[in-house]
Length: 481
Figure (tube, one colour):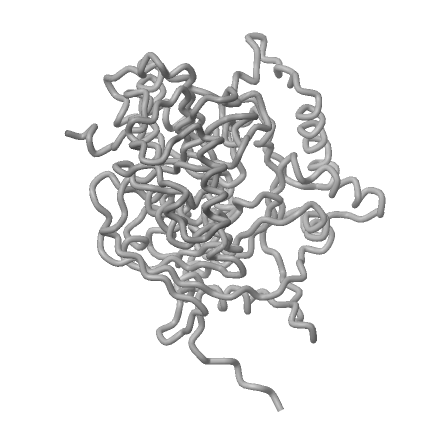
């Protein structure tokens, strides 16, 4: 006797999960098939070496894509004679050389550091059509959650798990709880997807999403571009979530159509037919539901050393005593000491010496256009020492240059760089000097994240551009007046 398929209402997460279960064990864990594996140079060398020592092959090299990004300098990579410029940092050079050798040795597609398609893995995946709705995507990087913006179940994994996926194309996991974040109303002037997700993290806290996969729901997300959705899902990890999801729709399909690695011809039509079923059914239940009023969201910046330390740009630095939890009071005081801020200080009075526009959160063409719109015809403030714009991929760079955005940045006194992770993290030459502040479009403001002693304020590309012009944290809405 055969059992009937479960026809009860399901969330989007449940649909993707159930479609990928190979086997469920008595302890509640499941063996999950992995559709896509993105590999970069930081977390892969040990995994490849372990495969080599065990005499194993990569199980599905056709479902794996290798891209260098974290360690690459964003200065020119080819000299006047057409030769590659050597990487000066020995550790970075070793990791990059290992990936360049390991990928072809194991039959994996490799995008060279000098190729036009090179970029940050979380920009390259969707851009190439490697990331698709309804797929499971992993990478040895926590911000793999970004790919949820195209309706994929995507999450970061550790080095040992990288090895496991390379060897078996599966992972042993326990199903997460589901969380709905529903945003009602419409976003106000100057408010972007980055402001919204920072606000959400402020509401949830950095542990609020722990053990959950978040689905972002409501007209605000439905009306977003795919690039804005990628930004929101990218920062789900900063709220403690395993992953973030936004249901694929016509906007998603239009974005992915004719991408190099996306299905083509009749395969495309079949894929879209399936993708249309990827939505939460009426009556499906979430373990947790959070309601956000879009009217409450303003252009937002961080003040402390955690992504949950947010305040509207028109607000003030909070006093530690304003928090009821003693541990939070202690953390707030430590943050203020590190950041060099005082309670009651207006955020718009905080000067910045560095500007970073880039990262897997905000380095796509939409982000660069927003920054250029603010900078057009203006110059950076004299107190801003260092300001760089780093496109998320070579294709984004090419598009920006075709639109003349590079000239806008250069004329405003900012540097136009090559693609890479850059100043998001202190793992390459792009570091913020100790004791100095950076208006950053990246995703983390931890102690030393952008370099030892660096002080980071997270914000949208438009807000970072505004800070470049004024030399201080600035309400983008004031720039528009």
